[in-house]
Length: 160
Image 1: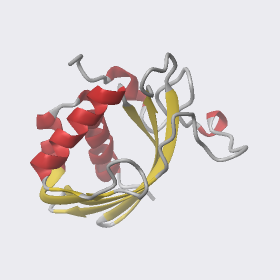
Image 2: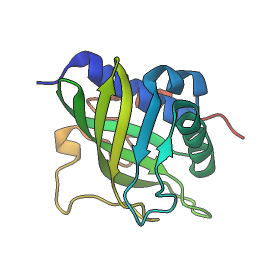
Image 3: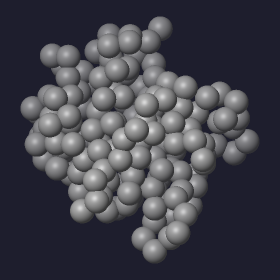
Image 4: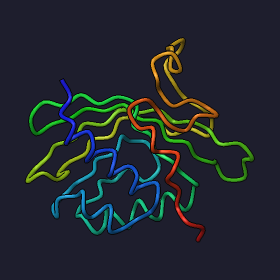
């Protein structure tokens, strides 16, 4: 069973990442948040602290024209696991690609206190071989939204 309040908090966090909106991001993050990244991704060192993480995502989204879409959410008390799709533009590329990943969230005081991120970012679309993304309501090329996160299409970082 998925707690709708937790799912809404996570979607709000990703909308803030996509928009590069510092106020929106800090409203979702615990002051002592830590975000862990899977090595060997570029920039895989952990990011610590609410303001630092918010500024980090604002910079990233502007650099790669990113949009995050929450595809699936499972919650259990103060923890949640999600699957997501990030649409982005590799440097010099004309077309956007989709990177798929999963993250584990730990909540404290109703805010995101820890994120453990599992994905490999490559300059081409990634995904599970043969998985029926469209049939399951996940984000796909040409539909940068999902059944779980239909409002994702309304978010985009302003130009630098």
